[in-house]
Amino acid sequence: FSIFCLGSTVSSLGLRLPELPTPPTREMTSQPMAPMSRCTRWLTSSAIAALAVAFATLLGVGSTLPCMELRLDMALLYANNPSLRSMKSIIDTLGLAKLLHEEVSAWQCLAALGTAILDGEVNAAIALVMFGGFAMCLPLVDMLLLLFAACGLKGGFASSTLDKVMAVSRVLRKLSMLDVAITGIAMVVLALHSFREKGVILSLRWGWLALLGAVLCHYSMAFLVSCAHRRTLCEARPGAAGLEVQV
Image: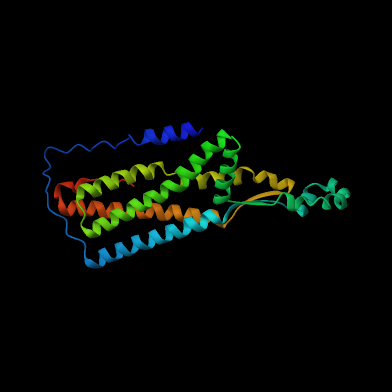
């Protein structure tokens, strides 16, 4: 399954939208775009800085806070299984609610995978690469590249350098799987919803929402920087006005 995920993701990097044919009777004008006003540049820079800070905060908080919680609701268990009421006094002495209560965060998951790898678990090594590398590290690296590109646009870096940075950023963004990870967590919680009838409750926690916020900041940052990069190209090279923004 991991090979399938990586293969499908990498292969999609080769897909490109076909260029629209230019009508022969239409004359293309190459007029330079009007430069952005100082207010627009300031708002864009402020939004990029705010998104970068928000991403770092949400990613850190989301990694440490629990994303999922498993607990046993004894009252619900007895309500859905009346036959167990006769043994309630015995079952309560077992402390099942405490034994089946668990909260899982991203960092706990990574630590558990590292421990399993030391015990010789090959599947844990694959999971660590997928979750720790593609889900947690690549979005952070991509955000750093986007922040570098934003600083380069403001500082007047060479367009060739910015083009390479944005190209690498696009590849990393395609390979980033934090959005896939949080979707998978939500699907697991929804798939096990039927266990509520047995008193076993699996629910999402605040860490999941924080990671979702980090994903939204990531893609919002990519959109703003890509638009600013395209605008800079159009101002410098009027013939590049037809470029597509690929986020």
